[in-house]
Image 1: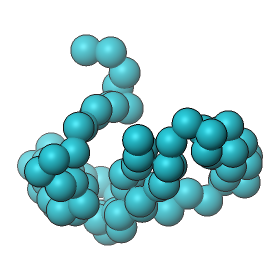
Image 2: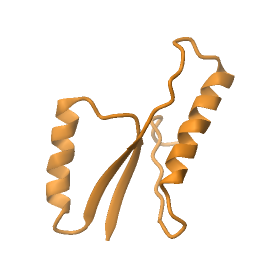
Image 3: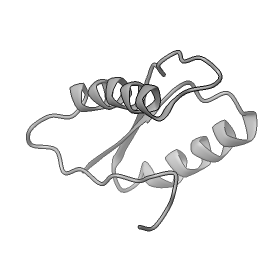
Image 4: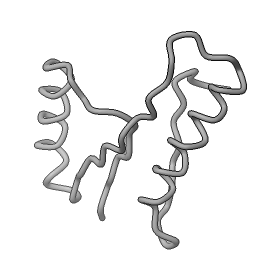
Length: 82
């Protein structure tokens, strides 16, 4: 089995990188694990709702370009359970 996490933006925080490395080490016995970071869309500070929708649409297109037809997709949202 192959597990791939596709995320928007670069991971900068050292504690998160360390946590990912630990989980990758644990998972390597059970699956192939990888992370794909797609570039985030540059946006001005004060976004209108319409501009935010445009930014999210562009980032979404980048994510979708990394997904193959045969992939099983599980999407997570920053808002959590809805």
